[in-house]
Length: 500
Image (cartoon, rainbow, N blue to C red; front, side):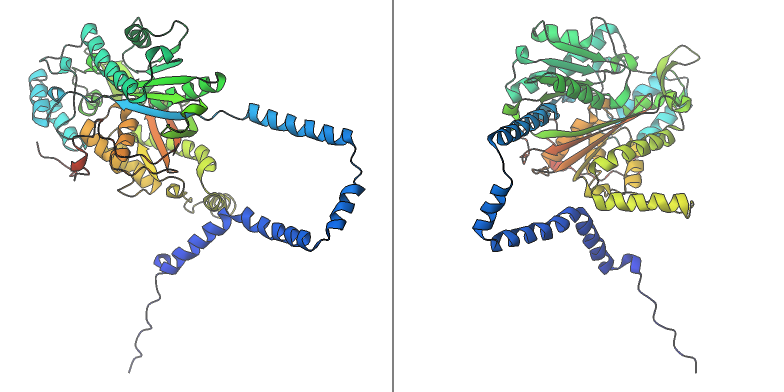
């Protein structure tokens, strides 16, 4: 009679006990200095307790300090403290921000979008069908908005209508920001505005200064052509300026003007932006004033910028071009996601040591050593960024972008919820999408004091930029803003393919 087979061994990789081993390892490594210093402090304390007061007095007298020694010591201490306080970076606070909410009359349903496409491209049924397939899998909903000029048949991409769109988006966000913060236009010290594809003369910053009659000595900067990650570039520029000028504030405006950028040709790689980009804009108030610390929502911890423009393939993967028929549009190359992945890898390699706990950094270092000296084919260790951040704002560039980052960073569905729902409700609003995502998290009442937020954006050139914020106070769910009338509906289920 054959013996019964031995019971199978447990799957140790899924063992609950291993989970506690890892937690214990993380706690030990992350608090290594504490474990090291506590015995030393306890030993010194016990030695002092058991010492005779006369022994301590004798020890002090034996040092033979003179008045000159004491005076020099005080001077050295004061000088060191002054140098430390003067040289350390000033904290940068995000006081508040405001977002543009398009009127309901600007909405473009799937049916309306496809009807326009069939009329504008009546002789190109393949191009119409291609746009329908993209829209079905885009992750966008039925309430995204495009400017009035694009509702015309055919669209009217005139300079006048583009300026009107810019005024509507930017002034609406600015008015809301002034109302929320109590800031007066003449109190603005620094103004930074980014808009990639619409750069008129006078500039958009001049338009804002003229509208609100700002001071003549305001420091203004207008950034163009820098893609969807330009919002974080603007924040970085404002941060550097605030480090230079004490007791100052900065207003950052991020938007993309769609009116002059509607592609009317038939090239597939240039039709994609038509299906994804929608109206949006954000105005953010930053400050280095200590008086704003208590009311500020966030404190800026890090900005990490990665530029892959030296590589020809990365440089040309997103570009504004003319097609063979002379129509201007944005061309997205087929290897865009591969290049984005390489840029992300470079970016997280830089930001990792700044934010990851010591336990994750050690595991990552061991992985590199193993791959370098022992087994080059072994899988690299992907750091667990969930230990460094409570919230993630991934640029809502499209469903593929969110899917790829979720997979690469091993994030849960809840951690990419803000990005998916922003794409569904507002579409790809370019550089302002990160702020709609942050507003979604706040509107859900999930932002608590001490929480850390990681904003990740990609842009032409090719760039991957990150910003890390730390929540300064628990934020109550706002009663106004772009999510106020619909946050109760979210999250919604988004099928892989939507039938049109």
